[in-house]
Amino acid sequence: MKNTNEKGQVLSALRKYALVLCSGLALSACATNENAHIVEGDLEIYDPYEGYNRAMFSFNAGFDDVVVNPIVKGYRFVAPHPVRKGVRNFLRNIKSPVILANQLLQGDLEGAKNCVVRAAINSTVGLGGLIDLAGYNGIEYEGEDFGQTLAVWGVPHGPYMVVPFLGPSSARDYSGYFVDGMADPVRWYLFNVDKEALFYGKLTADYLDIRESVYDTLKDIRQNSLDPYAATRSIYFQSRRALVDDAKDGAFGSPSIPNYDEDDQE
Image (cartoon, rainbow, N blue to C red; front, top):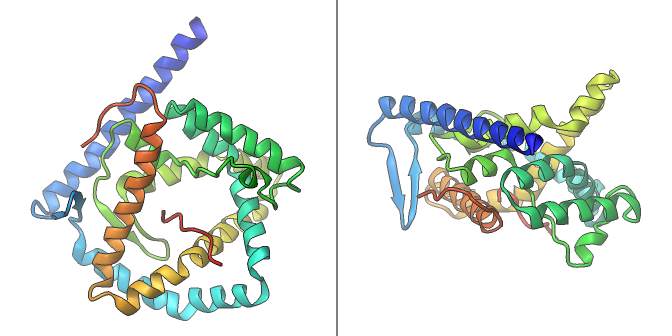
């Protein structure tokens, strides 16, 4: 009983800290621009730094044209779809400890169980995660992150942000990505055995995999949208809301609050 009470106190402290942190970010943005609330249907977006964000969006588009997109095209040329899918499966599999932690923090016990089963199956008969045998058997991948956990706890997005080289997100979600990265057991292990280069190689592979997965979507937005910045911003918030709604469906006791995980490219 003592361990249960201590665990509850830790989770309560985490929730309070996250709420204070993100509320402070949101309040500082309010002081910057009080007319930055955008309503698109039932979607509410807060973009107080739009001028800066648009400049960074243009910078990132230029960087993509010169650096990222040629690399993505080269990756697609040398690695056929089955190879790219195997890499994606492997990267997803080694994220299992972080995903499991977020499932538990969200109160999604069913999702946590599926995460453990997926990792067990794919890490063994799935050749270290290269083959998603669990997915073939109906246990689908759920990519949970601490940004989604904060949302389930009731923390709002805060200001929309476009970060150089990385792209769109929000104060809440970037805070979540930072926490996930610092808490990743793979990072702990590799740094403890002086294999930092392998960890940075993993980060590079993650970045390349993400950029390859959204390449066609971003290309379509830039070619067919009158305002690619606004279209990208809207898609980001819609995809994050879908992920959070899915997380809330599996949570217990979570408070009420007012991808870029794209499908695999064939």
